[in-house]
Image (cartoon, rainbow, N blue to C red; front, top):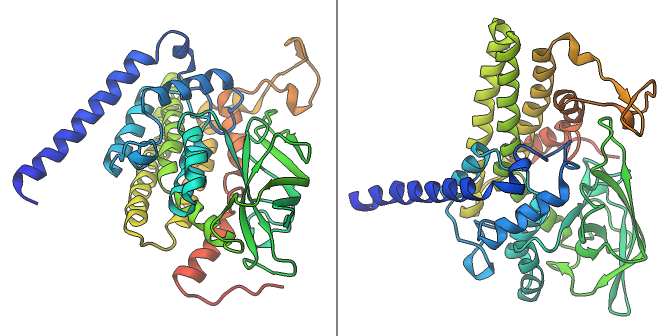
Length: 410
């Protein structure tokens, strides 16, 4: 690269950053101004419809699906530009996105593995945020160990007929579709005989039941398939290639999508710092050290996400996805603990209210009036479990990357 080229790239990135800042400043106003800092894991109930409208507003201005190829409605944005967008989005305090699963997970997976017909059918709805998606991986008997999937699908009269149960399905109660990993070869075991199906949720054969969490909210769900159907051509890849597709999606989930996830992380960390400054906790050397470590940890997560993106673009890489999950899950859990420590003894108390909002002796979690730090602490208890537990991620790294002996399985 000659000198003129090396100088033009930073200039282009600076101009891109300025365009993002300007647009956010001009548009995160009026009715959208109240959305600043709202939403995200544990708080997905906050202003959901308004955040959906915001996502569609972003889409209309061309700020969704930045890294997608232009032919599929994206901007062909470079990795640097994607990082810049997420940084500026976080600095502006913009709300957590509701279209994450479709835009960051399924969209890139369809671009990589889907048929042209599937791309034409589904990518526009993801791009414009008119179709919302959920992820059908975990089951009661196959949480972190996806290869134990028992949900089945069989081809019958030109349709897949799906039976089984998924659990911990984020936002399924507001989603239009679910991508479902299911067993399509009777008698197959582990990762053999799985397929990756696209299943509509608005049909008689699907029941969605929200799961009440410790926080009193219900963004996770159980999803039951009782002879639910989807078209024969709505299998991504070939039948039996579900494991390959599912693992490919996880690379996207723990790569570029974590840049969006860090919007909330950065906001939460800054909030903890603000509380520490306001109540004097920042004068405690132990707390100051933990805040510094959290600041460093967040930058490590971002640096790893960018490196993962580089490896995805180059078609290389191995255990980056599992490393990413270990990094952010443990960081976020520790932040929840730090938030409680910073808040002090008062953080151990939470009043309860009745249906009218009046003080009550009811102890049901639904009636707890949690503040944002108590909710953060309780919700992040699950971060090291869902999406693949710490133990599973370390097994993947040790067996598939380091080549250590495989763990004995029944």
